[in-house]
Image 1 (tube, helix red, strand yellow):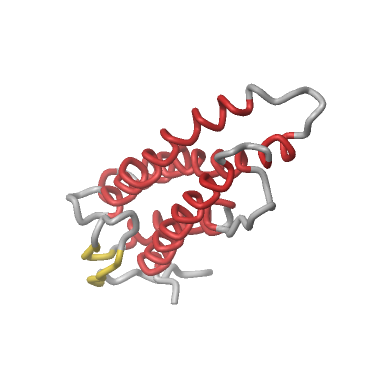
Image 2: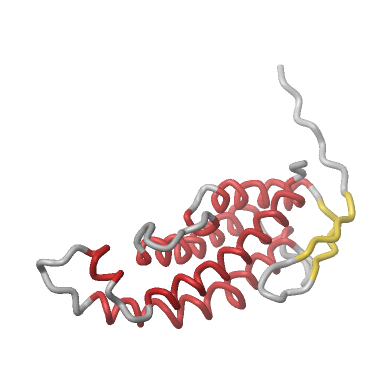
Length: 164
């Protein structure tokens, strides 16, 4: 028979990404579990892994970031409203990261890349076509800035989840 270790409420101060400031929260088991779920999802995605010049496909990186919306929504729904009590709660911050952090980046770059992708000749690979785009380097630079911010978020999630 295994017993679950009860999480004692503990006040945490955590730095947040995307200029969202910091979070002071009284951590509890519900927030810890939700943070763990999101931590696992984000720390294993291309969204937080470096994409060096000449590596990977930009569309895959944007899709990975876009998928963070669905994953976050699912985790928040499953965790319930108790993790979203006020602006200093895990739920509120998770929503702010999506709406104030990721959304502006994706709203800018998704249509620009899509428009360029639609011009791809049939005899060219996706990778070769992307590398010929005059905005590829700019997108990679902005993607790396977003990735840095997502790493700050992953660190915050780890702290909320109780990972040392």
